[in-house]
Image 1 (cartoon, rainbow, N blue to C red):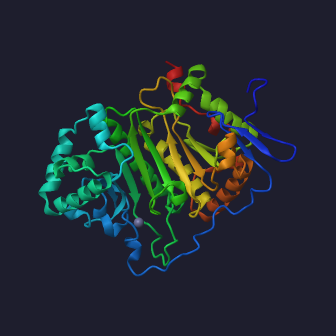
Image 2: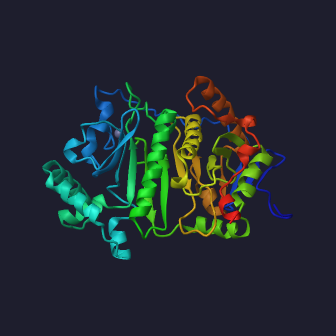
Image 3: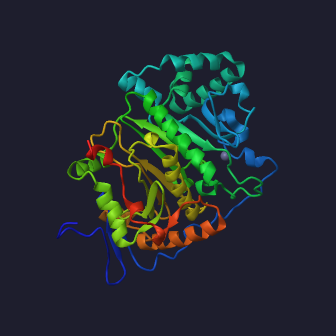
Length: 433
Ligand SMILES: [Zn+2]
């Protein structure tokens, strides 16, 4: 930090912690005396489940496969074998540990790509649509979905057109099997990312990475594919059933533009501004062979940042072990977070056309406060937990979770993290060229 610039994080004499986001410039204050409030109360109206109800609580549940759009892929069995494009009359033949399908109500629609970019569906999608419609169960499935979409949008299209949009869209959902824990008796026994086993979470993340590569390859007009997970309604989720989303967009947005401008002057931006700051300020939470997690500075909400330490930039360029390393730390932090805390998980990585190297990183935000008038008027955000307190809690909880054996092996916690663990290698490829 140059002389005269405001420090990224500073504690005032009264205990107030002032932060400035190193990449965003966002100003955040944590005022003393609010950090020990409980994070989130379990739901106050839990309901007893009737037998079998745990499999049909929402449209993402296993007894309601045909309430979502035709399935692009699913993972089955203990080894998470992938099945692609399961026909409508075979969806109940196996149980999907994870499944991927197009969002019925897209943020960026198939029409958007067609009308604004002249995108036409490739032969493989046209063929899949023909096959799906030739099956009576498939046809009935699509007739129902097309009617729901037509009612929501107010526009009528032919069944064939609607089918192409539903099969060939670029906004996908990835859904986990369980809505509530196996054997749950109440509807608040939800399964969050942290309630998965490390292996399940590893399959979930690898499946999402593969979907990201698929969507990038299938949508040539996409500049970026946004990957995120909203957990619980205060964080924007419409169902309390674990799922991630991937949305192709034709620009990568102003924050990435800002980071690319900063990267032009310093290829090691993320090392210098985030990781070195975290080491200096004692904010490193954990690491393994392939990723490092820190308590983030300058976020509107308490936030962990997990960085891949690999040389690769795009998630899909990582080795399976590199993907798993990121998954294991993200999973462990979700386990620390607990089931009843609303969260956003956001993935960041180098847009394929970007001129500078960027690391793959995953940000996990605790949506435990609601910015309001003070924030709107001042653009100073009040965050109830400062990064030091967030790190202290996470380190203590990770040690306990490790003792109980519920997080992946190979995670170094708190002061066990080594100097080598905190070296990002994302720019080594380009700097040696
Ligand atoms: Zn469900």
